[in-house]
Image 1: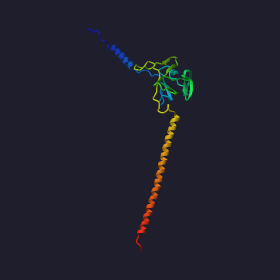
Image 2 (image 1 turned 135 degrees about the vertical axis):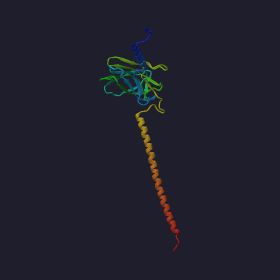
Image 3 (image 1 turned 120 degrees about the vertical axis):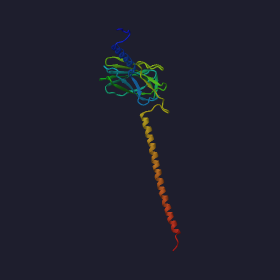
Image 4 (image 1 turned 90 degrees about the vertical axis):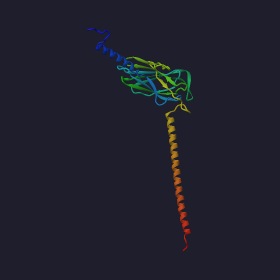
Length: 248
């Protein structure tokens, strides 16, 4: 029997096909999730905002036990307040500024440079994520984003450094740094607070109630005037009819 060189046995074809399929699957797998930062609402320039650092666990056999976030030195933030989280201890680190800031009419010579969360329990287990909220401000007005650096530590002592900035026109780096996008400053004032929002809402409600009360009062007055005019007209008609009646 003549053997054709270059032919493949069925088993070899199966192996080759499986390898090709694996390669396609590998190429189609999306990039792993990474540490990101997003505002709760808007992060307006010159204002204050609550931001969440979202940390997913990318490991199957280890938990995330520590998150360290470094703040940009070129745009220091004088006010940084963490929200308490069950199962986590938080530490806020401040440093002296080369150039003091002016905040609410007061000069500030130090700013927060780092916030560190350390798990007191199991941390972020495989298959879960955790949000780490911060109240920050006042946000700078001379930039469109704030770029942070985050170090994620696992229970097996592995450290993932999310510190690579995204460069315009280039692909996303392997370990991108979390970046907070800033929106345009609100007209007439720098940002807004919950108290401002409540005050504006109360003012609108008061205006609406005043307008409604005025409308109701006007309607009542017009109604009474109409009744009086109508009664006067009836009385006049009766009197006029009596005057015109023939004398007996």
